Image (cartoon, rainbow, N blue to C red; front, side, top):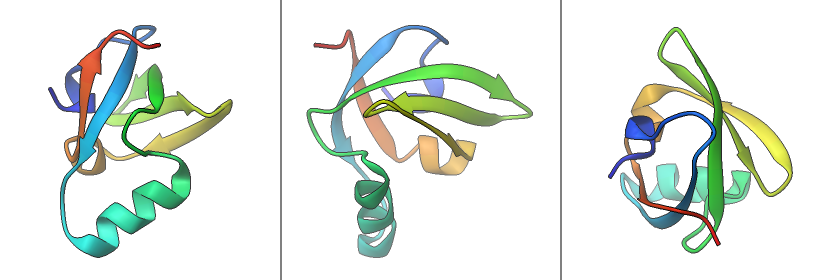
Length: 74
């Protein structure tokens, strides 16, 4: 499911990153890589604050829709 569909506080494991090559590279540089664990901290106005690799990052819903996750983190 897309990251944007997850509930706040629940960890998810990133399965793949969709979108154009430059979008994938941008997200990978932020730490969104397959196998990584991501948790939604909060949602404000459709934008998400996520915790990944001990960092909090704000991303828009359109970017979050390109990140495919599976429930449950390692």
